[in-house]
Length: 367
Image (cartoon, rainbow, N blue to C red):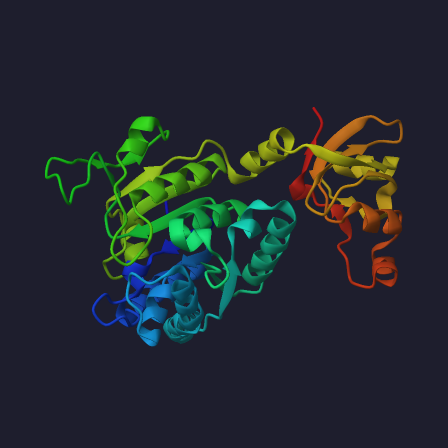
């Protein structure tokens, strides 16, 4: 299934990236991972990495213990980020792959306006051929360091960019009926068609270096599969872990309920409450029916007090609702530019705004 995926998010934990004894990057392992990713990209696959490791690397640099206070963990994250990215740059340089750091918080993946901005940045990086390395912005985050980890961030990132596969590299080769480190009778679960209460009860506790465990991976799998993204939990401690997965290495696979596109469209249609409306002309209405985006030039009226990232109703000239979509301008700016051609937007707003006020990817036609 790995070879069939078109867009893949790979989550890497601290225990894989950082040598537990030295506190330094596991360079041989990273070099092998880089070779795997380079091969995937050469095969036409799009890859994004969500990485832990900044705090673990920063601890050594600052002489902190694992039981550091929250503010000390934040300081460790600040010191470790540069070291983490240097390790990635060194690993991917032989493959002529440019890595790009993207620091996110939960707000960036859960608040619609910031979600749109983050998605646009990641999409641009991928389109430019860069390899985004996403990490939680632990220097300013608080609750995330104390209680969270990057598993959920990886799932939200996969949802954000419409990935069809999320690979969670772990120190174990998937889900077991019980913790195999404590119970020799535990059996491996190769596939999970649905995440039930019974599946959730199988989760264990976190490892030594990281803050996540199987429980957070199950939570991440729930987020991702609901967004139409398949999930694989597999052992990452071997060299070339992604190549091993492609060749059939043991893993637990979580099947998605729909495609990423269908899941996203269903979310727009069913989970978002409209904050306003755009009335459009007949030409724009016809274009929407052909699967096109709604351009600023086709908008005739703006109502409501919506912000960028809110859902808006799209009305035809008779006032009938013909679509629902996520808008890319707030109401004030939308009112200023309605009916304008693309080249005229910057003169009014003072910046180069999008030609599409609602992109086709963010729009659902009324049934």
